[in-house]
Length: 488
Image (cartoon, rainbow, N blue to C red; front, side, top):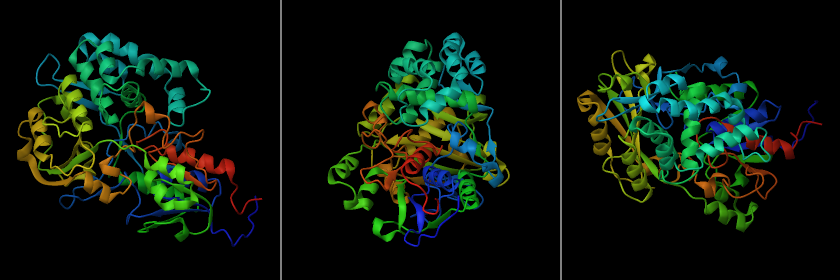
């Protein structure tokens, strides 16, 4: 369609925040001919997908996200020419390894094939196949339903019912119901612990764990060659190809300081939307945004190592991700303590070792290592000793490999990215009360009472993760009610 000059509108859409969701929204709009500006407070774009030399020269660390189970399942990422802008995915042979102190199986291993994963789980092999076989067969339909707002009515009711019945119990109850032995139980619990909630909470803990495992069995748990920042580079490259613009180093305080636009879309925490929009939004709606609940935070350590982590288990040495937490009961205790304001003596540790598979991450012969645990919201307690005790437990001699460390507590994360309220890196509590009402209960969660203000962040469906789908759906909401200024 022909463009017409409209000097009163500088942009069709201004997007506040350049995380994967903000850039996802920007690409969705710009690819449809919208004039788009992205505004970012940090000096570089990326939100939770950035990389930096945090320890020593030549050691490339992922500042926040590291492994991306939902990236290849994302319809948005599938639709964008990310590879043309340098994005190359690496797929470890073993997606996740979960080591144990004793038992017939030194470590449970999750591979892309659910059949091969089941074969390594002893007496639980048949149960694992029964649990995941039907889901894998209907995975495309499920991802289409679950990577967005709750579909009403669902397009694939049978597939969604199969999934729903499996995830109704809490992760703790599901692990005990579906499996009889510790390896399968702990493997499931470790995935469910990504929910950052007590594992005895119903629905959400099982749903998040099963979604991550299903994504692994269909698409793998990949990471980008060269660091998480390569995802951002590719998204920015696509945006510029579509004619979009991005400005960094601009912390927006009020909407009045932004260029005039037909729509403003926030890739931020709900409280930031409330503050920046101010009286453009009704007071009652702002109060509801301010009541949005954030959960525990994280304490993270990035390591420069003289050699790869000396795991006792060979499976751990070949895994991209290692869940360090011991038994099901130990993981349950650790996650409950973080929720209840207690710093666990034996925390569940999520660890990744990209340099084992990606030579660009460290100087020749050296390695990077990324590890974090969940801690009470806003914590400034140093969890280094607790984390390293857990790693040494399954990798004797680990401390002897450390060349340098870089730590970040909850306060550090919030200073680094104001959207990570209290160190919450998953965009808010995802329990049954808030899973389907993010950020507040509305028929279209990406809209607000102001018809030109929208939100599409980890605090909207489908929640946390590097997939860009919250931004995609928010952009759809924008386009359903607006037409770009230059279009007839």
